Length: 363
Image 1 (spheres, rainbow, N blue to C red):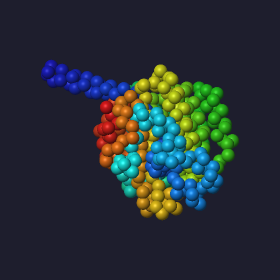
Image 2: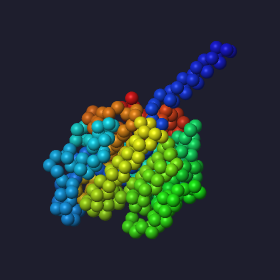
Image 3: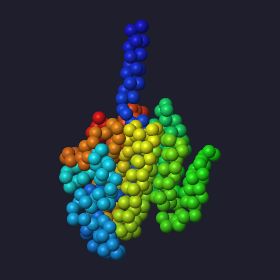
Image 4: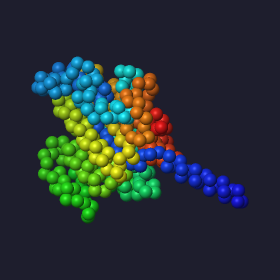
């Protein structure tokens, strides 16, 4: 009996030690809805600049065009192609044989976000309607772990995330659309943002707020409450693409790269986060490319909509830069990757299938 007790104690200690092997103590996840891999890796697209989808072509060329893809992509995403490319990893450049894809067959937003956060391309999640997601998600799972209770939060421009993340079951604070932060001790800046968001022009409709407001909420919440997991979901790249406005699509992408840069700089100056935080950036689906009109669209019938990308930087991620191996990763693998970075095993606790972690992200 004593031997059995000792053995069980050793197993328990090994389990605790295993959960503490990573250096990551916090995670920030950012999504750019519908952001094409082509623009991430090639920069601004000359075919689209010179098409009916770009007004003021000369101004766009002056702002975004350069002779080489390396120059163009760094102009469009300066943070991604300076800091992340030198200290982290970037996946999905199909031009060099590295592929990243969604595994779900639908290739639009709700199924894409379900796949990212549940690790499960559930065929039941086949709508953008406000259907409550029955699947446990990795944010919900992490929020139940010791030291993370009440330390997981999500801010999104699109209003659908309360259903995607099932706030009724998960209890996660999810501030989507025009939802106010109602914490009694919220600082003056957060209270001001509650007022401001309702007064800003609703150019994305009555339910989806601007990415700038989503970013400002995320930034101020991070400063005051020090969440251990922060999810920030931008939407305007998808909106501008659907509108067929390539100029504004590029401008929003560049702006969002700047938002991420500022957030990362705040993190690196804060002892709570510095050298203890992993940042993961990705999208929910791809878009069409040929014929050219299909860049506005995505979905099961649009070729290329499964083609995605992601980037990661943090203390447990080797600085491989642009990943050039001829492999394919899937977004269903991201949930378990996020969990393992924090020392947890989502796959064994989710209650449904979960894709294997992407091992190259972890040392």
